[in-house]
Image (cartoon, rainbow, N blue to C red; front, side, top):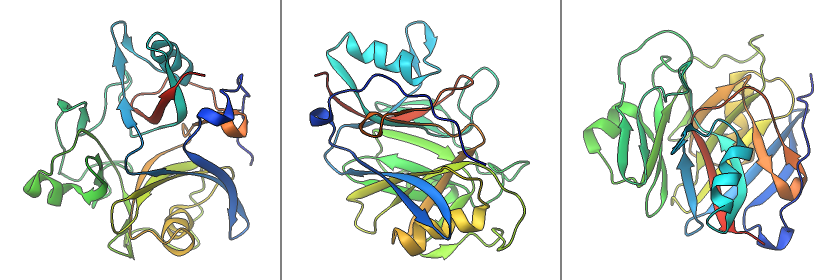
Amino acid sequence: MRFLVIALMLVPVAAQATDCRDTTFEGASYTVCEVAAGEDLRLFHSGPDGPYGSFRNLNDALAAKGQTLGFAMNAGMYHRDLAPVGLYIEDGVEMSGIVTSDGPGNFGMLPNGVFCIGETFRVIESRAFEKERPECRFATQSGPMLVIKGALHPQLLPGSDSLNIRNGVGVSEDGQRAVFAISNDEVNFNSFARLFRDQLGLPDALFFDGNVSRLYAPALKRHDGGFPMGPMVGTVVPKG
């Protein structure tokens, strides 16, 4: 089943530092966007009027500062009021606390993890994060972990018939690259995890969400719409 995409007016390609491209893995279509350490990658949730809820609203807020999104993606699960589920840190301020207990749904399928944006990028198992408390300018918690130090999450079964559009992030061993991926076809967790490990070569990866997964990639003429979102991640570039 293909995910419907709504095209938005393009930001000039020259302003785009983030490399977004389409790829295939085991017959399924994916779009991946790679961000290098040093790019202006941030997490976003709310403005003066409450949660942004959409890429369009976020871009409108950035435009007032002469900026725009280079790319963006939803970045973690959220409650009905769009509040983050689990840890959420934005510009050094912890807005929601970490959750380390197991529970229902994908978030509670331990081990879950945290995507941390600091001097470099990290994907860290949540309980390890709580003990270490690394310095993160931005951080979002989600679950389950997909890849943990090169090993797949033990509950991600090959051949599972739990199929969905899915998105997440993986990080290189040196923390210099964060690679965001979204499936354009419905896939199971095991296949999605192996995309990060086996095709993208990333030792640690974290699931963000399914079904509500969305991508803004103006260089690919892509702007996914739908229900309001909670946390979002994206690069910020000067508005051309």
